[in-house]
Image (cartoon, rainbow, N blue to C red; front, side, top):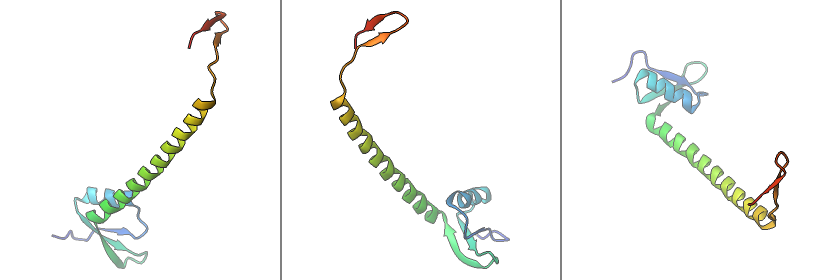
Length: 97
């Protein structure tokens, strides 16, 4: 069943805006319109799921690359670090590590 009037989002709408429009209207599909109001396509919830999944995949790859870089940096720092005594200036006592 179609809503009357049909629900539409501009072609420039982002994923979040389209999801919010679907949620607010309780629909699974939206018309996509150009600046003049002409219909240029239909956007489905499945389309949005694919877009979100792609974005999550990109985030996962970025995080994975950063984690690997941080691990290698930590390994280098551990290899070059020397145990040093910690002096507590207030008490003047050495702490064992």
